[in-house]
Length: 249
Image (cartoon, rainbow, N blue to C red; front, side, top):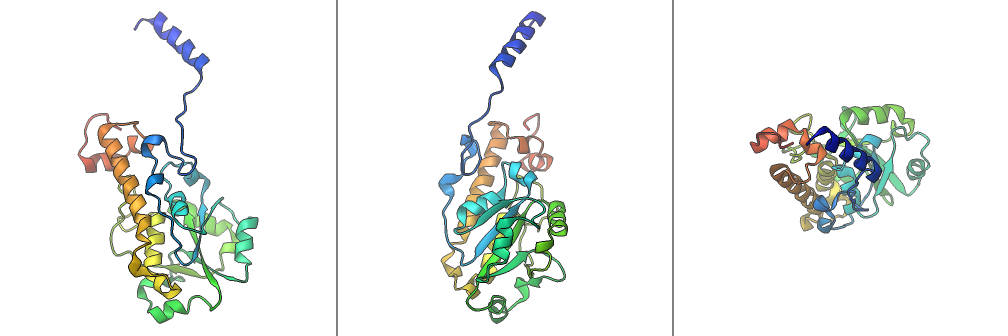
């Protein structure tokens, strides 16, 4: 291409404006990676409040949003400092709710080490368990807790992961660091029975079903180079895992 043709094409692109892909209104994914057909809603026996960090909100692979689509009666609230957030404070002050935070630490009750009787005692009779989950990186989660004074004193729960994360399209700090949707699934697995949720029905596996479908689709895109998703284009770990070479990402 000669210089004159290049400059002419450049000017033409300016007049045409940027080209945007159509995104699904629900999952905020382009058509080639929309996962809505795999979403199966269910009631987990508790209300889940997903506090999504603004940075996470911009990511196409945000499993907090995915969890929100699967879980009935869930909330998706964007922010970082929730101290004066009216929706969060209304939930915290609701006398019919027992609010807890899913957050690891020495002051957190470890569900993996508790008996069914101990788990049942976590929620006072007549109250609905309301589980707060921060969707973001570990650094943003720590910052959210530090800034949100209204979240600092509510009871905390955690669990000990028994298998590695399956989040193969996004680098995790460690193999046993779970994505938001995996963490919610494991929490339901451990505490569901004490909330009269039928764990044996495996309805909560619908969380992992849509998650795994998304992961598989993104890996297919990485292998084929289809649409070259931005989050995969620079993923060295995924590239190495798939045995891909050349400028695929």
